[in-house]
Length: 184
Image (cartoon, rainbow, N blue to C red; front, side):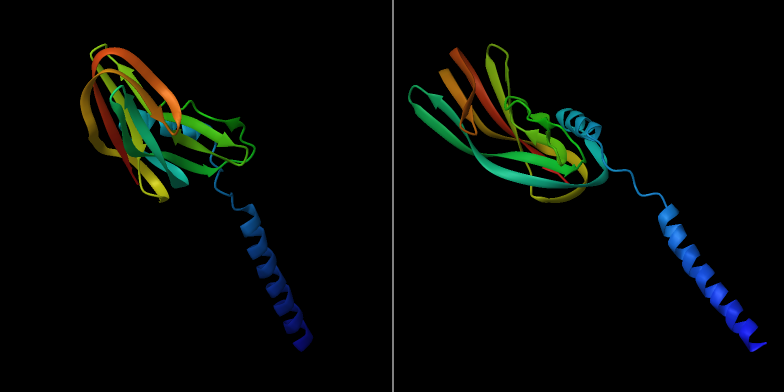
C-alpha cells in the first residue's frame, strides 16, 4: 500500500513538473518589434503627434552644433541629434538624410528613427528645425512643443548641422531656428 502511495506521489510530482515546463514553453512570446514601427514613429513625430510604442525604446541624445554662417560672422547654436531605437533582428543598414527632421535608421541589430535638421524656404523666410529630448527609456513619445532659438534676417547665409552644410541661400530672408522637444 505504501509503495502505491509513493508511486502515485512520484507520478503526481512528475506530471506537475512536466505541466509547468510545457506551459512556459507553449506560452507565446511577445512579438519582436519590426522595422515598420520606425516608420510609424517618424510619421507621428513629423506630424507633431503622439505615439504609444509596442515595445520599450531607448532615447539617445548626441550634442551637435547648428551654425548659421553669414558674411558678418557665424552664429553657433548648441543643438542635438535624437536617436530613438529598439532591437530588431536582421535589420538592414539605413542612414536617413541629415536634411530630414526624422528619418528611419537601422544598423543590422537595432532600428528606429534619427533626427536631423529640416529646412523650409518660402522665399522670404527660412525655417530650420531640429529635435531635442532627454536620454532614457520610452514607451510613449510625443512632440512637447517648439522653442524659437534664433530669429534674425540675413542677406545670405550657409547653414551647417553636425558639421555638414544642409542649406544655403542668397537674397534677403528671415531665418527662424526652432527646437522641437520630444517628450517620453
